[in-house]
Amino acid sequence: MSPSEAQRCGDIAIDPAARSAIVDGRAVQLTERELMLLHCFVTQPNRLLTRSELVANAWNMRRGAGSNMVDVIVCRLRRKLASHGPRIETVHGLGYRFRAPVPAPSAARSKHAAGADRPDTAIAAIAE
Image (cartoon, rainbow, N blue to C red):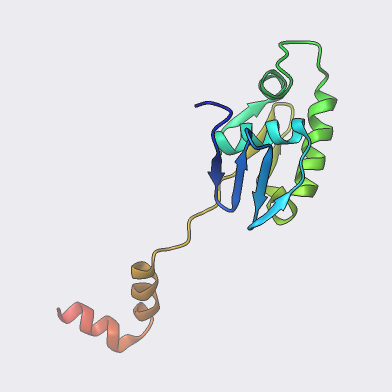
């Protein structure tokens, strides 16, 4: 997938070509490096990304970039993502993982679950 394509993960949408990010429906100003790291996370949710991988993607470097640079950018990115910031998890000694949002239960499952604790509904369901 091209880094210029718009991507979405839950309530976070990024468009690297337009250098824009939308979080919870509002524009968030990100630096180029923050946007590149967020792109790495959004396009690979739930995957452990090492600092080396993040440096290679955000800085186009194989070596020479200290992991402190990644830590600083991740810290700023968490702050800018506000309530979504904790979705960037630190995996100590290894790197970071961006947790995809847990999907809300479907309406059908919610209705069934809501009726399951009413005895008359549960009995009617068993009788069918």
